[in-house]
Amino acid sequence: MKRNPILQPLSREHHTALSLANACVRAAQSGNAATVAQACQRAVLAYTQELAPHFSLEERLLLPLLQGAETQALVQRTLAEHQHLRGLLEHLRQNQLEALNNFGKGLIAHVRFEERELFPVLENYL
Image (tube, rainbow, N blue to C red):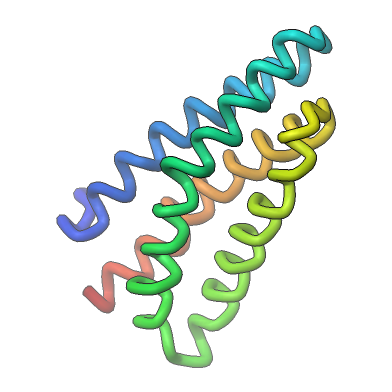
């Protein structure tokens, strides 16, 4: 099924986010301090430049469309996952391997959730 044109740019950004997330997990699994530090720096930069604006757009423009009681679980999960990923930033700035692994795995799960669950519901409102 083809995405609603309004959601297509966000879906393309999800592809980029998955590449970043997989690189974070691989770096964490390497256990190499230099590799972990480099991946942490990349994750912080990508969060600042790409993910934060992406999350903000979703929170300001898309989630308010989901006002019904039946969609509140989707809204709450989206917001909680955004906050979780945001909360890992300080640990990433400290090059913490566990934070890098959690960030990568959390971002993978979040993108999959949005593509498989949130966006199909949003398309009904667009």
